[in-house]
Figure 1 (cartoon, rainbow, N blue to C red):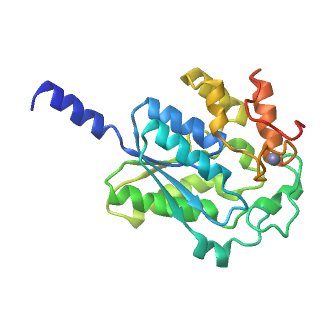
Figure 2 (figure 1 turned 120 degrees about the vertical axis):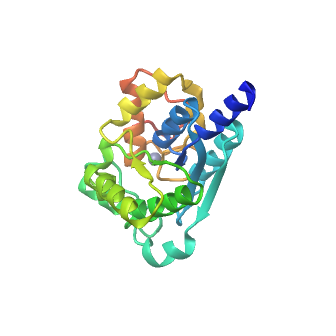
Length: 238
Ligand SMILES: [Zn+2]
């Protein structure tokens, strides 16, 4: 094999990772970091009955721009019988405002969401002989989302190891980082401020982000912490 062909093969072989990419700012930062490293094979996004599709529109735009292969997996039938009682999927619930740590934010829990998505991503990795599944859980999620905690990630790795012949690692590189620290990682990696226009964090799906929901609140605090102005438009910045 010629040197050029060898280098090309090595570049292909370095793409050992499938990422669960929601279109939000955390998984976007992770996508960009892994993309800079040349490790992204594919991105998986999921439709599980979210009240809006703003995040998924970001997924399509970003993956198209970066030439990343992606799939949006339709979990509607699964969601219809398992995920309909969350404020994220059922508009009968009033969307809570405040911080993730607030008790009222438990309304935004979607039952077993990460286990379902990771199971599919692990199967995708096995099918494509990939080594890693990465997702963007972070420390701010721990309080109300049990499937974003370290014990869950350890458990999923144990299950992945015994459920398949092909070894797949499940990694959450931001597991012990705050949203502000994730944004700082993005800056350090070279992600431009205006690139975050192609991310959607708000639980609501308006033309502008609401600026009041828990997700908007944490996002705005993260941008303030790194001394960046969030390029997104808001109805009202909390
Ligand atoms: Zn919002």
